[in-house]
Length: 133
Length: 338
Image 1 (cartoon, each protein chain N blue to C red):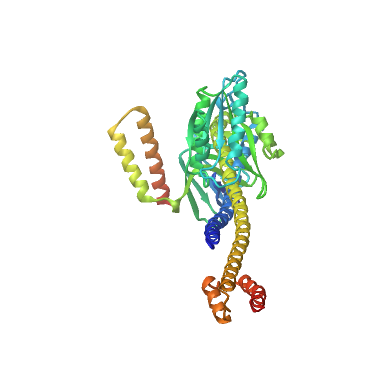
Image 2 (cartoon, rainbow over the protein chains, first blue to last red):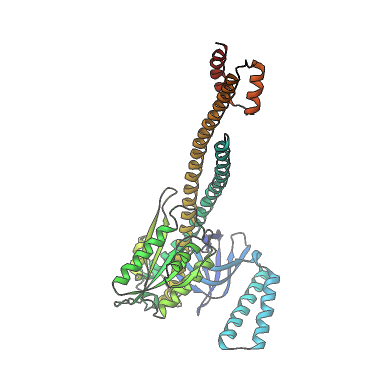
């Protein structure tokens, strides 16, 4: 068992104990941390962070950018854009997904397409996390 | 005309009184806001600390990276200034201090032949520089009393873009540091290029726990590269929050002394008004008595009272008038009797 913290620039948005934390790093794929993990710092991909608590329940976050630091008995998620599953507005995420897909169909220059794809990724992540949370 | 001065004073007193109501309300509002701003600044501290600690750990692992934000320029041609002031006045010297400090810096750099580029935050700063025909390249307003991270990111993006593009070779940050409720001071700091990671780590907590060797994914360099922009944002956000707390603290102090001044002024004006009224009453009594004497008739005492009441409508709690009456009447009566 160890401590988990989700820290946003504005506040510490989540603290709790966990048996395991599952995240995904850029280029590294999924990675799970348990107590006694070797000190670790990673760039988080646009993906979910799953916190499995000692009683077996899970807290899921959508993390769009950030870092994970594991040190001693402490896992810290540093992110300026993270949302807990219960805070996600499903209708809004669905609307964002629809408009992103429409933008992809419509096409445009490279920057527009990249932006639409990023928006689509974020919306999909939100929906997936909201459904699992 | 008797009573003219009194009426004038009465008007001034009521105007000072309504000003006092406003300043008092602003003082109370600022007092609650400064507490909230301080809480927000405290809440933001963990993130900045953790980011610094990650940098420490990176530095300890010996990661060095040739990031554009670390680009040290020896021949500085143009200096960027981020000047943080407020959107609203009535906050004592809060707005003028950083604005003047920045102006001195600009002049100093100009005398060394360097150009400047202004990033003005807050309506007051923008107005000041525009009025004096400084070139304001970027202006931001509408959030100084309650800044969000998004605001900090917007500024950081513009500053970093200009720096990376080579438009500016150095960036100075001028803001008001919130030391405590009683102390806020203007601080001029170098903002870009960033100190190298070793120095950043030393400025941070400096905890030697960083000795343990970390694993990095994808690599120390890649982590540092995506971390530095966040570090810049977090530092700007911290400065904005300090400014907000300082602004409210300064406004509270300014409004408190304004309220005190208003109170003092009201006391002074009330005294003047009472004296004027007293003088008017005395004059009227003298006129009545003098008139009666000139007619050579005895003024019945009842008529005298009636005349007095008509001339000076009784003001509730008007002890001054009563005193005037008490001290004047016996003399004048005895005078008429003899």
